[in-house]
Image (cartoon, rainbow, N blue to C red):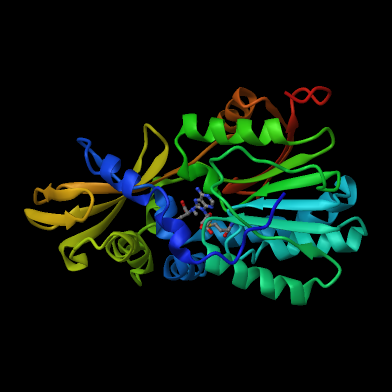
Length: 326
Ligand code: SAH
Ligand code: AVI
């Protein structure tokens, strides 16, 4: 596994033009959520995690607080690889427990947000001097390559319910890549937001301070800066609503008026007043839907850990067939 951390945010540029051209050409305009996360977007997301309405992070943290010790004592991983690590704030609970268990050798945080990742890695090196901290700038939809020298067993952590930002087919593809990469004895630890009263979910994505709206608009800032587009941020409004049939939040940016946006390399993109760009979906699960998704990816649930109110779950999963590596 090769570390390529330290790349500037220009990593974001790769594929952006293609994704913008494709995403804005269909009947429902779309932009992939990974483009939220330049440095500012990653900082805004961190602010979101501290909002009173955003129950996801504190609920997952409480579960990790209780369960990191027992899980690490049972699994005794030598390596922790984290998909979409971000600030790795909650991960510290897993890292502490891994060190305490006496088995931990290396932590590999993977993220597309290059500068932010390198900053978190520097802090972690100071906090965990006995661990090798080996950040990797990569897109988690690409096949996962654990390399030949990653010590066993490894835990692949995918926290924060980032799995929910992929549609079911995309989520299965990603999980299948994990299933293909892991070795016998390796485990996936997945954090997943569960279905609940839609009002609670909608509040989490429509906070009173407007931080989520800023985070949403940040994708237009990224497109303006990286591609030289002329999106007028004051002419788009944040909207987030829960779809009860698809069990997901949809986050949109709604054009306040008829307007033309110029994007070099793409051309002029017309928006009618009220027309929107879908910028993110955030799927919510129950145990059956997660078991089905993991099953379709060649994995099974070994442990289901949820809070008393079934707000959020931590899932420990392994490959269905532990003996052969495809
Ligand atoms: N795991 C952290 C952060 C979640 S925010 C937590 O639980 O709080 C989602 C993170 O995934 C961000 O840091 C973002 O940069 C990263 N990310 C989103 N899409 C990605 C992709 N396609 N490839 C790699 N990282 C991605
Ligand atoms: C990273 N991801 C799981 C967050 C979510 O809840 O879907 C991103 C986010 N979007 C708006 N608020 C937070």
